[in-house]
Length: 154
Image (tube, rainbow, N blue to C red):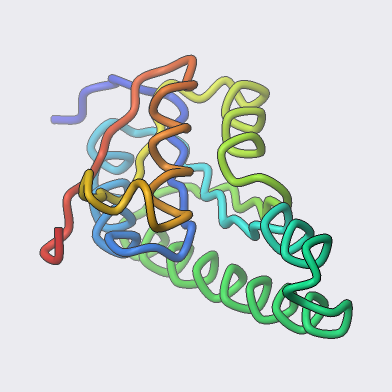
């Protein structure tokens, strides 16, 4: 028997560890609660811009990296769409560019999301890796509940 806990769930596909496990859990949760699943694939263009400004990248490299990240994000969207379709879950894909946490939080609020689903991270990763830090900022700044899915690697 389905329970309507949420109407709108947002899955964040940021390319970090635990993403695929978070996708599996989000699809199952959306199926069980008859929710719409908003799938946000993120492209961290803010970091690429900072690397360009600090002369760590040149413009051609920034463009190349951004294209690769966008290609990966499109693959994530397609993968989750197939997973959700096989479970009978409606998905709303969105490709977000910019600061991961800022774009996710803005999009979640504008879509009236009641739950954000993220892949897990370890505390020791926060100081040295971008994606866990961005996930922590989503958790800290969210206007709604956040589910952190610990993958097998965490």
